[in-house]
Image 1 (cartoon, rainbow, N blue to C red):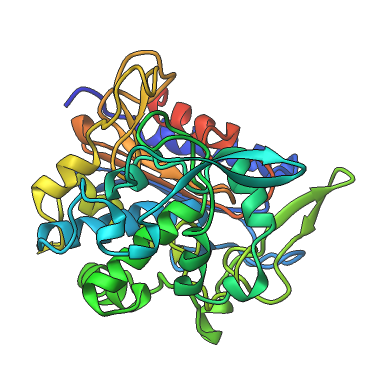
Image 2 (cartoon, helix red, strand yellow):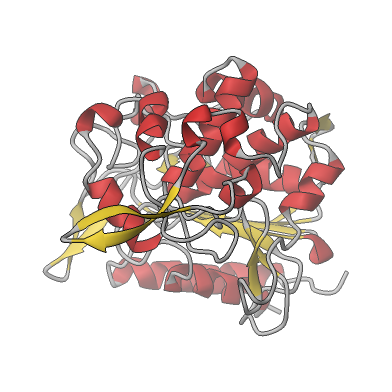
Length: 381
């Protein structure tokens, strides 16, 4: 073991960080845990489930996962790869013929229009590593804003819409984040190769075996009672930004099982998913992924030329692949969500760390709250 936090110091420092964020109204709720070699070093809860009330979250409170949905969908894809039903380097048009001819686009009077046929086919691996160009960067923002309402209702209709869209760049030549579209396509690939909805597939193949009883695209009435409010800050005061129609991700209705951002889940559930990744595919003696699948997920996939720096894309997650990242050791992997969720797995030190919170303030990859949590863990000696 290279590093072992002092439990008392870690608890004190974690409390200080999150209570300060609450006092400054930068967060409205949070649930965090740090587990090392099966021992809980810290599991703490802050703020409130409901706006203006004093009902503190617990391990079973539900949070909108946003992009922390992506690693779960990535695991589902790898299951289909293990079974020979998907090929990482196959063109997605093998499974979805509507993607047989794609175009790189350009901006024209606020519209994204085709400019040139692509030379490379979009592959499954491109989608998992954000190198497809589909729904990426500024193009993705425009294309999402212009998405017809009838294409938002379900995953199949959404993917049909994505097949008509020009790409930001030639597939495989660069990387830029695809916040929604790429992982929607991956979720639909799981559907067409399994003859199950993505919701049913995840339930059967991951959630039930792992005991993730509260992770869902469409919470029940009882689960909604445990769903934390979506915090915002307006005129320097905390505010309630919870979607009025109960969406898990405000772009899409819950009937659209958004593979990039649509799940809600609890701290207790995501701890199990993180522990499964740490233990190379098993949790509580149940194997859901092969060691090889997890190895590929946590291995940097992109060259220094395409993605320079310490952080690289693995398959559906970021990987700390070199020196230069502030706090996480080389070999750590995980991801974040737009509403402030964040997790990582540290294989060298046997650590999983999960932060759940729901806020429109300082969320997503590289959020200050996420980096502060990382710093808190690795400086609590």
